[in-house]
Length: 345
View 1 (cartoon, rainbow, N blue to C red):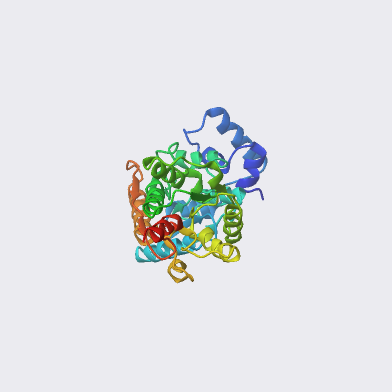
View 2: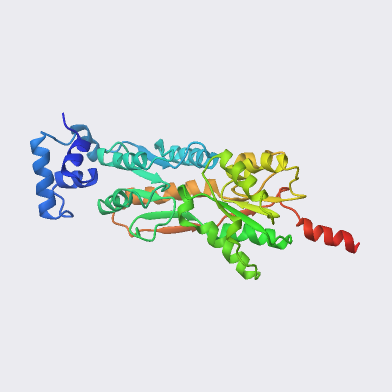
């Protein structure tokens, strides 16, 4: 028997549009609605009776869509979401994108089969899957995004102030005398908003330090990418004295590269990460990191989604949570400043 995905493929529309057409939604123009219904009739497609039943009752399951199972920050965030959801009488069903925009689309479409009551998700490919995001908003699906997308104002969102976090990290390094500060960034997951980069730029500009494009390194999201990025930066003729990494996972990858270069952290180079995952304090040199308040974030996400489930017509909320810089031993005084002090003494 044909399913919703078959109809969507033949009609050349999204599954969201099929769902709306089969409900005779006024949100669709008549031509599209009739065309989709004609395809559905030809394929003998009928909406699942189970889905129709679930539309009338709760599943008590919340879908959680996360960018990667390899980054500990997402595992830790989900752990708090799961714990908080349990206290509200809900189970969670987690889906990991794993760097595949098709998986993100497929998971977002599950809501139309009513497999979950609502969604919490961190957008990984908002540009590629923009139409899917917009359909979710149009269909008034109960969801909350762990980020803010300016072109999706009608969807509830809870964000961490990434720009402020990036600013705090780089300001800390500037206070330690560093001016050759590199930034290692990836565009995946929360990297698409460029908030950390804006904070990096703001802190430099505030101190009159010109941004050097050679010190901004784009890479992947894995531990080994942090290692390779660090090796490339250390190979520069005028290498940085500090590196700010978009996430702790990349920062952790830098330790081996620094050691292989015969350098020490923080004596020769300072390292700062972002996320403050549980491993950060346990490294050979404990990592300075911008902490995402994971428990507060989870509780706010759940409270926002519960409000949406209870009050479907309530105006959208866009909440911002402040991060906190946690200073440990991986960041120290710039070796040039330390050398100048030594000569003075």
